[in-house]
Length: 198
Ligand code: VGL
Ligand code: ZN
Image 1 (cartoon, rainbow, N blue to C red):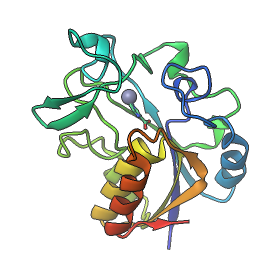
Image 2: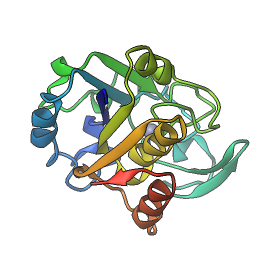
Image 3: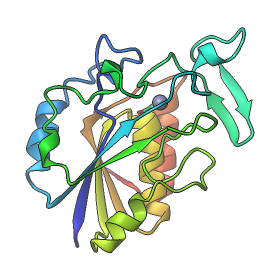
Image 4: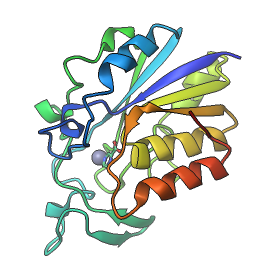
């Protein structure tokens, strides 16, 4: 098997004191740096929203962060403003060894559609190009690490499995937001898609 490591959204805004901080988000970075050394193919994702993005609560009158609204493509959790293109919060954490990556996939740039997955926007239809990149390199297995387990890691893992890759999530190198039990739901969904949780 030819395995790629997919490092999801290890950005300042998802680390402690960031705009959408994930508890312990910075604790996984040293281990991710070590893990990256084992792969010929490392891909980073970077959440990359324009100002006023439709996933931000402030873009909707009367809405608060973590409210859920109906979008044309389904339910959408509204977030605090985060990972605005070019901002310090959107940068990778300083300790992440970004030099080891052969590609960086930016996602969430469409003002109208959020994008949790590294493969498709949340309409589950608009591709990022990552599948073509990995397939053209002969990759057939994907290991995932990063933030957040129950959102971007979860959606990326499910899409990867549905695209035919063998998929493992290395849970010790992930941290979750865990909104209203979302971590337990995500773990069940991933397992149901054939994703291995390690
Ligand atoms: C993420 C919420 C909003 C993530 C990104 O990386 O899991 N979560 N944008
Ligand atoms: Zn986002």
